[in-house]
Amino acid sequence: MGKAKIIGIVITLSMVFFPYLARAQGNVDKGKNLFTQQCASCHGPGGKGDGPAAMALKPKPRDLTDKAYMAGLSDQHLLDVIKKGGAAVGKSPLMPSMGAAMKDNDIQDVVAFLRSLAK
Image (cartoon, rainbow, N blue to C red; front, side, top):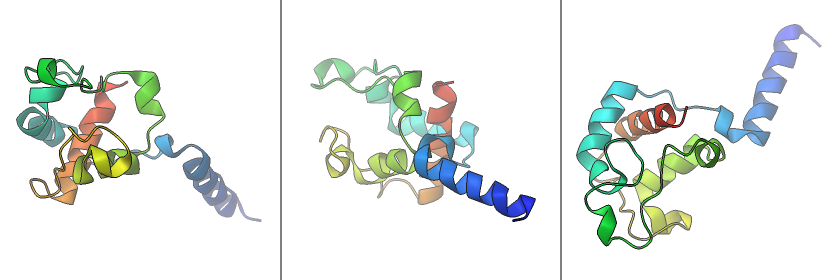
């Protein structure tokens, strides 16, 4: 078995068993702008769940700077939550679907920004 094939197998297995290692390939700066426009009212400008609307929400928005929590989420899960809304993935129904407001590449940018928050 060649070296390239072994590397490919290791990468594939890593993505299966550690999906959080596969990171979105979005633009962090664009994602920050979109997050500020679309998400910060609930999640706060820094993603800590302390936006102006958060006080009225139950449950409170998630702290997206929590490294341990974010490390356990795959990019696909984050993409689904943003695109389809919380209820579609077993989370709070207060998290709206952003699929109509953002294109897929915009959502990838937001995920890239979220990853930058939890480093």
